[in-house]
Image (tube, rainbow, N blue to C red; front, top):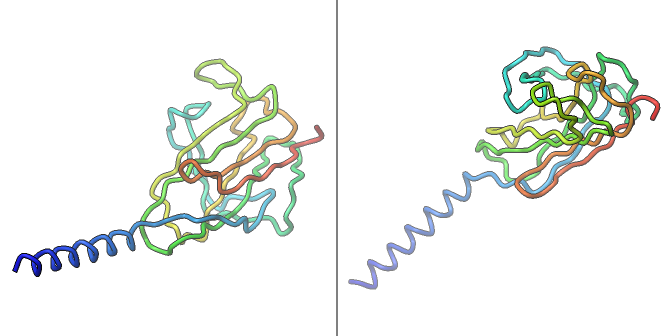
Length: 172
């Protein structure tokens, strides 16, 4: 009787762990689908205490470039970046990603602290693994006196960098 109970318990635990694992998304990689200048379909400004300006733009309905390019003209209205898709198990469970932007010297001015920043990080939570509209981008209009040079955009999942793309902004 005790053996039957232990076997039943083991089967139940295996089933429970299998169902739990099946619902937990696992990101195994990512793939860039486009890169260059893009246009937003819609943009809204939200408060973000972690932003250099205290606000962050959220764009949606992104219109990717007709031709990929990593050479970006220097203009305050310029938006550039890349679209991507995540690779992994296709569940509806959410994932959290970190976007890192590396900015050439002298960096951008943090309006809150007055310090120059050469690395910016933003975390995005509750992203569905199977979304087709994921992108990582920058808007030069968000910064006072953005520098020309090589800007690097990265997407991280936990401690692992999934994607990295560099852009030459202006004539460095």
